[in-house]
Image (cartoon, rainbow, N blue to C red; front, side, top):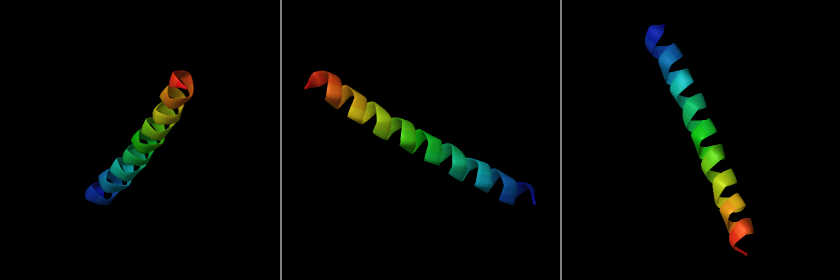
Length: 33
């Protein structure tokens, strides 16, 4: 059970990191252009 919870938390954390990276990319691109 503990491993299943940590895997789920890890997936959610990675999803948030990916979302932030995409937002930063679009934000920097918008500022640069």
